[in-house]
Amino acid sequence: MTTDRFRLDGRTALVTGGAGFLGRRWVAALLDAGATVISVDRMAPPLDDSGVRLVHEQVDITDPHAVSDLAQRLTATRQVDVLVNNAALDAPVSASGLTQGERFETFSVDRWYAEIAVGLTGTFLCSQAFGSLMAERGRGVIVNIGSDLGLVGPDQRLYRVEGRPEAEQPVKPVTYSVIKTGLIGLTRYLATYWGHRGVRSNVLCLGGVARDQNPTFVARVSERIPLGRMACGDEYGEAIVFLCSDASSYMTGACIVLDGGRTAW
Image (cartoon, rainbow, N blue to C red; front, side, top):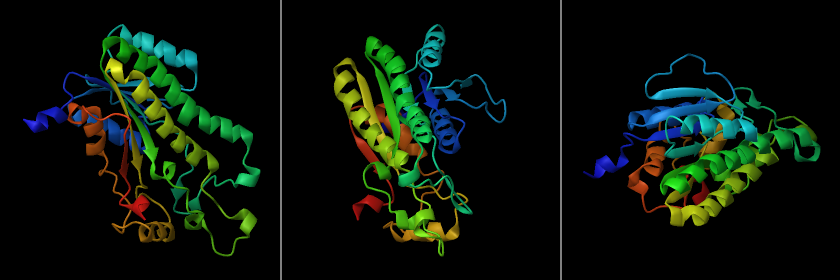
């Protein structure tokens, strides 16, 4: 059956940032497809919902030693077949507007280092540790969670606040674009580096998900999307299962865009 190729029974998937908003959805989708899931996050899970097929690991993925130790510990009892690099430090848009919208002219180098460390360095370290083991076995999948803003520049008009001076207008931070663009490059590098050893690497470029954002922001974004709306929280799960499963067995180095058509304009 064609649908059987979407199943992940008997496989183990590791999701970084698994306790976050999207991370929890990746975990749920992979569990539903039959995988055993290791949710890795710097923060402890809100509830102890570990079980036979769900394991929580509290690890700082920016620490090379911590990532190496995690790989060694897991290798002693299981093999990681799928790596989903999801962890990131983002500036979310809440009901009151864009938070931590630090402008480029005054963007702190400390924040630059911190966000690059999670979004890019953490992805590099996890791919290095677990991808190497996949290459040794001759099989494995790496999926990086990107964004439509890895393909186009952010439209800063979306975040403007009426009546605020130009120098104080909130903006999407520079780190977001740099990280998401970098993930596309890393994805292609890994695809060509380990392809002959059976390791596939793809990146999922997502549009924004409607949550508790300011209604004005949601309306502005929706006007720029051909489908006329932001994504719902449950619309991305099948895509992650597709990329992690044998249903995408001939796909590597690809950038899969789910943005409601935003980058088509």
